[in-house]
Amino acid sequence: MTTMVETPVAPSLPAGLLIGDAWRPSGDGSTFAVDNPATGDVLAEIADATADDALAAIRAAADAQPALAATTPAWRARLLRRVESELRSRVEEFALLITLEMGKPLAEARGEVAYAADFFGWFADEALRVSGDYRTAPNGASRILVKHRGVGPCLLVTPWNFPLAMGARKIAPALAAGCPSVLKPAEQTPLTSLLLAQVIEDAGAPAGAVNVLTTTRPAEIVTAVIESGLARKLSFTGSTSVGKLLLAQCAPYVMRTSMELGGNAPFVVFADADLDAAVDGALLAKMRNMGEACTAANRFLVAEEVAEEFTAAFAARMAALRVGPGWVDGSDVGPLIDDDGAQKVHRLLEDAVSRGARVETGGERLAGRFVQPTVVSGIADGSALLTEEIFGPLAPIATFASEAEAVARANDTAYGLVSYVYTRDLDRGLRMIDELASGMVGVNLGVVSNAAAPFGGTKESGLGREGGFEGIHEYLDTTYAALRA
Ligand code: NAD
Image 1 (tube, rainbow, N blue to C red):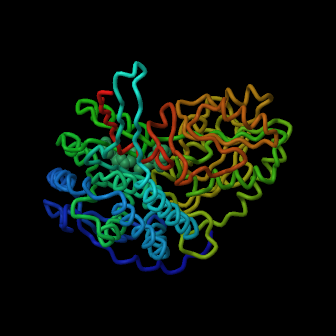
Image 2: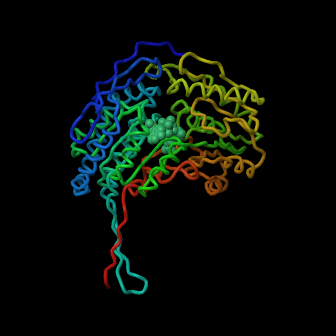
Image 3: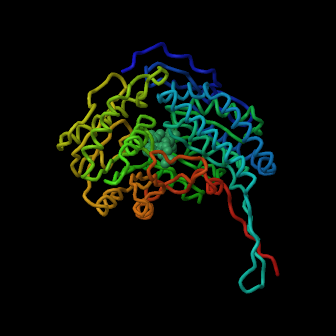
């Protein structure tokens, strides 16, 4: 572990709920503490929204809808550009806040700020490019005019692992499409959303365009908004189990939904791969965010011929990573978000070892929520870490004997968010894109996230896409007019 140095002071923040044009306390005056996962110390005490606050917020969004929808695309693009530029100029302030409330190292937090800013920039341009079309009916009897317009007030629910980027990926396309929203960030990391909302407000967003509800009562708040009947769309990022619950809750209202859910990414290394590049990619795909990413490599599948070499090189790199608080210079691996997260990783490791897995590096218990980067090999079928999301710095390596076996094992999961493949054979790389059952495939790359790309999953990893040309359409309805020829 790197040595503890004094905890930096958190940037100053609004502590209330943003509802319409005002920051206010919660309706019943209650508050909750947000802690620093590296120390367990309280970072801030903020408003704990009630169901009545949730109703007030979705009403404020509904009231803002007509005026926001009437703004021009150019006006919305300028608003988004101002937010982008503010995020880029305040990268240190946002990065420190992300590190303090979520735990990731500062360098990664800076990367998250840049990634979040990219979404405001990307959707500033997309606001200008929402096109319709004009066709002739096949029988020549009518003309077909197709246009798109904002879906209406949106409910945006985000997880704790990317406190800024997950909100940015939703708010930016919603605003670009002229849709007001209610953002409900995760209770573990709500502070960054408060700072973001303040930036959006200061950039000139109209009252009610973005509302923020921090709360320890997510089910009550989300239910109140859905059952108000005022929200036309839910965009959710989080676990598959909660996503399924929310899909069922939205069904009676036939609400549009986007679901960015859990993953169980395979990382496949073929014998013809550039092994140095594969080890670099493995480190990124496994260790970004301490492994607490939906895109984290959950299962390493390595060709038998190169398994020993890959495992030794990867384990050496994992062993060299320094564990410590994210703000300390030289820390590569911060704490996990909470005690449950750390205990889950230890439980999965013990289960694998009890079934015969070999610890290649790591495996010792550290203090608090810190977990040692760990590599295990010789994983037996039936081990829980092959089917559950690990969400921590634990890398299981299994081997395969043929391409067909690699594909079958990679696809043997209920999830389908992302797969990674390392090969020097172009034909094989293209074949893998066809055969791997996931919404995204990294070919000789350990990170796929990009504001210009359609991020999202298949199977139980979700519905809909964020980013790319597709992203804004999650917030647009289609209207078609029939015109007499
Ligand atoms: P979570 O499902 O526990 O919580 C996500 C959000 O839902 C939080 O805001 C939480 O307060 C809220 N929530 C929890 N229970 C709820 C309920 N009953 N009703 C309404 N809202 C509720 O997930 P998490 O632990 O915050 O995040 C980790 C999960 O998110 C992992 O499964 C990860 O893979 C997934 N994730 C997916 C993506 C993606 O883009 N696919 C990105 C990041 C994280």
